[in-house]
Image 1 (spheres, one colour):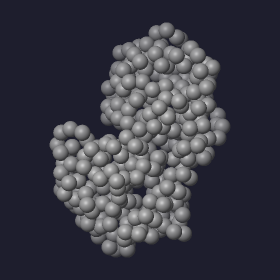
Image 2: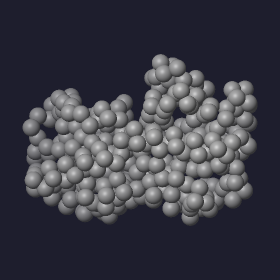
Image 3: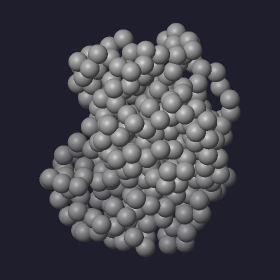
Length: 364
């Protein structure tokens, strides 16, 4: 089966998900090509893997006219390359694939817009074109339920959790401690794109409360995005200029979590949270919001402490509790590790995805 992965412009988990498919799918059974807006490093990686790449820019801010243009370009690409199936990643890519009229499926990585013109547009498009989608994958049950509420047939959505590479389960040295000369002080990390839905503001507010009580705790944020200026200004206002490090976007951010004392994911919305899985695999105790698919990753709170989204006081209390109770912190870290190792490995994700492709192939 010849499959084209259609990827909207993205960073982080979605893009890494597609690159994992590129590396690990059975190439003797699935001939894969990718249409996306990737950078030189990623296109170089695809070239090494022998995967053909076609530049096609699709982003969440695309106008209806741009989406139609992309759909026409996609239709031509499918015809020229003899593609059997388009696998779209994200709602905009999914809409583009449906408009092309070509056989397609979609992986739902994030929540769709729930208000405003975008929400109306997605619901209208799904009602009109949704029958063209042969099936969908959701990376969490929460996303499956959300997609069902906007009109997508739940019976045609299969939950396949994100998986992480086995290499993340290995011991690694404390890279960030060495880079920023943290030494023996405590280090709490947050890995997230700097947008409102990731809730990094609440991490900063909770960190400021901890910093007033302790002079041996440092904080680091890995990620970039449109809120970067606001969040840096907020950290300065709250007196964290010397205690909170904005490390920017980093390649392979999951490899940097090891060696930290705690991982925090304060999202207001979250499909599943790949960085959370990476922290669990690194045996780092986790505090995260009870949002979207996060409780599924943490097995309802067994693998980490869950807090109310947007409640920085509760977030502060959970972070303080783990710092004050090292035995409990270690216990939570071990449970998180076991959950990640037994339920969120890339090999399982690949096997389940291949089974889905085979089921869809019977419809072609």
